[in-house]
Length: 182
Image: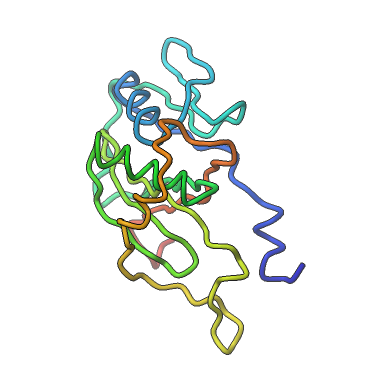
C-alpha cells in the first residue's frame, strides 16, 4: 500500500447529524431521493442508513433557523455509492422526484449535486478506482471539474429505490465565513 491511499483506507466518517425543522418531510426526502432506510425513530429523532449502518441522524427542532450565506456551517454532505449502477439509480430518483442542481466529472469521481428541502447541500457520488486516478508529474492527484455525461450514468441504472450496502458518507464540506479567521 502506498502513502497516497493509507490514510483514506484507515479513516471514515461514520455518520452525520442534521437539525431539521420538519422531521417527516426530511425523512421522506432522504429515503426517497438518497435511498436510505429508517433504522431507528423517536419523537424528535430519526436515524437513517443502509442495512445496519447508520449514516444520517435527523433531529427535529421546529425553531431551528436556516444558515445564512454569511454564517459558517455545512456546505454539503457527500453520500458515496459503491457503484455506477447505484449512482445511476440515484440519478433516476432525483430526476423523477426532485431537482438536480448540477453534475460534474472530477477525474477521480463522478458527482451529482442537489439541495434537500431545508436547503442543505448534498453530493451523491462514486469514486473511480484509485488505479485510474490521474497524477501530475510531481505525484499529486489531478482533480478537475468537467461536465458529467448523464446519459451514460442513466443507462447504468438498475432502477433500485434504495441505496445498496457499501453506501457511506464519503466526506463533508463546510462553509466558513472568513478564510483568514478559519
